[in-house]
Image (cartoon, rainbow, N blue to C red; front, top):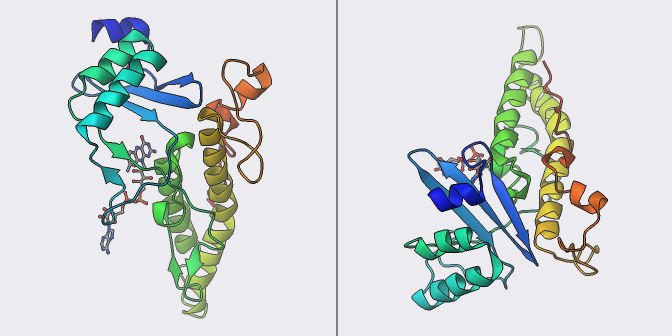
Length: 226
Ligand SMILES: Cc1cc2nc3c(=O)[nH]c(=O)nc-3n(C[C@H](O)[C@H](O)[C@H](O)COP(=O)(O)OP(=O)(O)OC[C@H]3O[C@@H](n4cnc5c(N)ncnc54)[C@H](O)[C@@H]3O)c2cc1C
């Protein structure tokens, strides 16, 4: 722990992300003196078993990865990776923003990951889900029916208002998280995923500024209907 704290002095106060050529790693501290690291590796679509996106990896793959870590990361992070007993692979997906958040003629609403599965690169997923629930709650309270309105129409109005408030926000945030992932992984930014990828070694200040958390759409607040 001493070495890694020297290399990453703000551990415990922040989440670090380290960039290398066409890859990046994330490192942060968990309670009880534990660390969590993630190393994002570009790869072909894997064959998944069952419904889980978490996969065990072979010992051969783990030792290759540990060797590669020595070449890519600073010695402290490479050592942490090397000393981790059972690293596993988690496949990262997102989905195109849905055309709507309410379904079945406005009688069912989706919130959270069901409404907008997103990559983790925007560091936003849980906040998005909590805000969905809050906005939906406010809309239901507002249109919950005062006894005069037609009973079947009020939940629909609530769900329509929820969708109008949240869909543009979550759609923009999912797409931004995808873009951040492509930037951090040095993948092409063209519309077909081609073109020049971001290279942290030669990037301009302006390009680097896109990686800031504050570049997330609605970073300073999204409408809450209150
Ligand atoms: C490994 C990992 C790390 C993550 N790290 C972060 C992070 O650092 N920061 C962050 O913001 N987000 C993170 N996320 C994302 C975050 O966990 C999700 O965005 C968030 O939990 C979404 O909340 P949710 O309520 O929409 O879905 P969930 O938390 O998935 O809740 C859905 C619930 O529905 C239950 N369920 C499913 N099907 C049924 C059924 N048929 N009947 C009844 N219940 C059912 C499930 O068991 C589950 O409890 C991470 C996700 C993963 C997988």
